[in-house]
Amino acid sequence: MSDLTLAPNIAGADDFYAELLATHEGLSKSDSDALNARLVLVLANHIGDRAILTQALAAAALKSEE
Amino acid sequence: MNKIFEIPLYAYERSPDQDADTPVRRKVVVVGAGPIGLGAAIDFAQQGIEVVVLDDNDKVSFGSRAVCYAKRPLEILDRLGCGKPMVDKGVEWNIGKVFFDERQVYQFDLLPEDGHEFPAFINLQQYYFEEYMVNRVRELQAAGAPIEIRGNNKVLKVEEKGDHAAILVDTPEGQYDLEAEWLIACDGATSPIRGMMGLDFVGRIFEDNFLIADVIMDAEFPTERWFWFDPPFNKGQSALLHKQPDGVWRIDLQLGWDIDKEEEKKPENVIPRLKAMLGDDVEFELEWVSIYTFQCRRMETFRKGRVLFAGDAAHQVSPFGARGANSGLQDTDNLVWKMKLIFDGIADESLLDSYDYERIYGADENIMNSSRSTDFITPKSDMSRVLRDAVLDLSEVHEFARPLVNSGRLSVPCTYDGSPLNSADALLDGPARTRPGSPCPDVPLGDDFLLPKLGDKFTLLTIDAEAPESIEESGVTVTRLALSTKNDPTQMLKERFLGDAESGVYLIRPDQHVAARRPSFDENLIRAAIRRAIGKE
Image 1 (cartoon, each protein chain N blue to C red):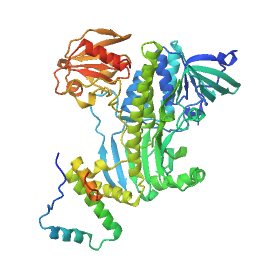
Image 2: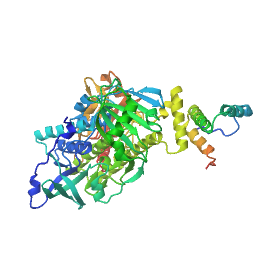
Image 3: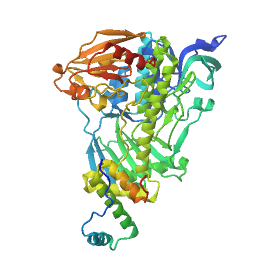
Image 4: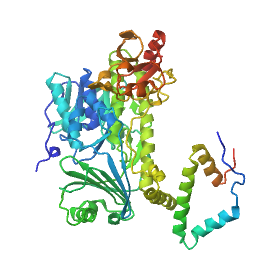
C-alpha cells in the first residue's frame, strides 16, 4: 500500500500558491467556499486511492499519525 | 369513484375462536396485513403451517405509500405466487434525471444487468401490491391451505409467556382472548406490539417533513424518475416525480422542519405547490396527500421469546432508496424456513438467533445507506450543503462527480457475511457475488431461469461437478440441481457462479442464499455445511 506524500512535492510551490489565490480573487466568501469544495472533489477523484484519501483527511484535520 | 383502497377486502367475520370457553392456541399468529405480514402468512401457508393474520383494518393501504419494489423482493414474491401480476401491472423505468436549481445537471440509465427474470425495479402502488397478495391468500384458501385473515381484529394486549404469546383482541363484536405458539409482529413503524411489550426502538430522527401526493394526470412526462435539488418551485428543498400505473404520478416535496402539517395537507395549499412544479396548464386531480417525517432506527433484537418482529416494526429507514417494504420482505423470507425447520423438529429454537444476526446486519446496511442519502438530500450543516452543491455543480460538467450524487441508492439484498450459518468459502476462484451468505443471482437456463428451480428447499447446485442426487442429513433432504457450462450459451452461469473456477458445488438455503460452496463434492464437508446451515454445528 502506498502512503500519502507529505514531503514537499510541488515544483514551483510559490507559483502554485499564487495561482490558487488568483483563482479565488474577487470571489465572495460563499463563492470561494464553493470553489474550495469543488477543488477538493476534483483532487480527491484524481487520487482515487481510498487509503490515501483517508490519510489525507486525517492530515488535513491536523491529526498526528498513530 | 371507488378506489381499491376504499373497498373492504377482508371484512370482519365472526371467528369460532371468539366463542371458545378457553383461549384457542394457534400455531402462528401474524399481526398486520401489510406487505410484510401478508408475505409471512403466504409463506407459512405454502409450507403447510397454520397461520392467522390479524389486522386492525379491513382494507389495503390507504394511498400509494410504498411505491418502488426491487428485484429481490419480486423474486421472493414470485416464490410466494404473486410476483408476476405485480410486474405485469407495475411500471418499469431505467432513465433518471437529476435537476439542480433551474437546470438538468445530468441523466442516467440504470442499465440493468441482463439475464434476470425480474426487472431491477418496478413502481406500483402499495394498494395494488397488497391486493395481489390478498388474491394469493384467497387462492391458497381455495386450495385448502390453513390461512385466514381476520379484518377489524385489533390487538389490545400481548404477553410473552415462554412457550406462547397471550393476545387480547378487540373486534366490532367485543374482545376475545387468543394464544399463539409464535407471534410475528408486522404491525409497522409505530408497532403497537413493540410498545405494549415495552421494547426499545432507538436511532436517529431526521428533522424534516415531506409532502407526498398522488396526482392523476394525462401529462407528457416520460416514464422516468426526476429528482430536483433546490428547484425554483421548492427553494432550498428537494422534489421527486415518479410514475405509477393508471396515470398516477407520485410527487414528493420536501417541506422543511418548522411547518404546520395540518395546514400543508389542505388542498388549497397543496395545489398551488403542484401547479408551481407541473406548470399552470397541466390538468390534474389529487388522489391522496400525506405528510411524513422519518426516522432511521431499529430494535436492539428482533426476537423476544415467542414474539418476532419483522419489517418496519423491527427497523425503520428513510424512504430514499425504497428500503422499507423491500427489506421487510427479506426479513420474512429469512424467517419462515427457519421456523418450518423448528416446527418439524429438525432445528432448535436457537436457529432463530441467526434471524437476528442476519436481518440486523441487513437493517444496519439499509439504515447506513438511507441515512447517507438523507444527509445528501438535506444537508445538516453549512459545509455539508457547500460540498453537496459542489458535487451537483461538478456533475453537470464532469462525469466523475455523478456517482457522488445521492438521491437514494437502489435497494439491493445484502450478503450475510460472517453469518453463523455460513461455511468458509472453499471456491477461492469463485465470483465474490456468490460467496457464502449471498443471495443467488438469477441466471437464464434456456426458456427458464435458475431461481424458480431453487424454490424454497435446500438445494445442492452442481456445475460441471458430480454429486449424489439427494442427501439426507440431520432430517434435512437436500436435492441436487445439476447444471453445466456446456449448456450455458450466455455464459452467465459461469460468470455468476464459477468465475475462474473449473467447477462448483453450492449448498443453497431455502431462502436462496448461499450457505457453502466448494470446487467439488466432498460428502463430509457438505454434511457439515448442512448441519451448520440449520444451526447444528
